[in-house]
Length: 227
Image (cartoon, rainbow, N blue to C red; front, side, top):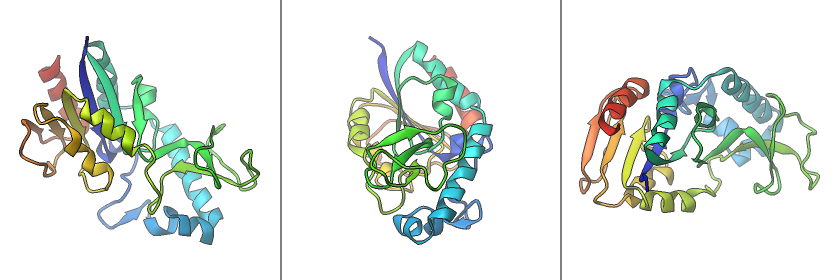
């Protein structure tokens, strides 16, 4: 039986593939106030703006490629039972070869029903158009969890964290809840490896191994420690 390795990834790992982090230091995402493009209220107020915004983000995701950090996590499946939980809405983990990925905040390469978020569909290409409808006859939108919406995968993710024999945090500041609270479910006797230039604060009842580097360089160090 392979040891259970749970990995929690944030914007820092996608940033090294050229994708902008969800919220920059100025509070904007690609020049937009997040409350103008990432809330149900924004969608109701200006659906065309929101749809176009996610079309552009999807185009960027499809043009990006997995980086060395993504590929290293996929390679760890040779020695560990690896389960990735990600805050990111891109599909770079899957394209790198990871087989078990839980997307907390949705995945931008799929659409969802405006009426029932459980109805999701693949998107052909990068563009989702106004007038594209779900089987219920309502508008399709990006399959992304917005501010003010529930995080449907959070319970499943907490159960995955409870099973971690080794836990790795890559490229997250643990600033967005409820996702940030998942680390609290990791068993106290399981070591936690944290890879980030700025190590976030976590409870002190774990063995912490801090790697104060960006994702790609930090994953090289982690691979040396784990394999």
